[in-house]
Amino acid sequence: MATLKEGEKAPGFTAKDQNGNMVSLSDFKGKNVILYFYPKDDTPGCTAEACSFRDNYQSLVSHGFAVIGVSTDSEKSHKKFETKYNLPFTLIADEDKVINEAYGVWGEKSMYGKTYMGTVRTTFIINATGTISNIITKVDNANATQQVLDLLG
Image (cartoon, rainbow, N blue to C red; front, side, top):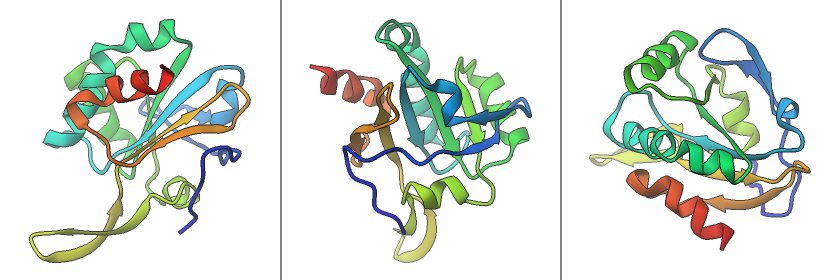
């Protein structure tokens, strides 16, 4: 598992979004990007996080941000999630876990005493030059946007 650090170059990727379009991190060159990894579409925590970014989307855009969500769910699952909650941003399908592994967020988790492999919820703030400026590892789902904005000062 790669462990990225603030100040490092963000790993590039190309994958399909919820509409079946190929999306690359390089498409966002010159923009600040909120790249957030979440475990599963339409679960309570992930929905709260996505809705935080949705409800504050215009504020984020006005700060020069693009928002990209990544999970190991399929394009079809992402499309249902986007439609159900009216999400205005890109959701990347990382079914083969290549992006999760490149960002070091695929790891061991535990629930109810059982350990399993899954996406460790993490938010990366990538600046316009493609460098990771901040990494949020303790994501407050319902206040995910505020966590990002607080880092901006």
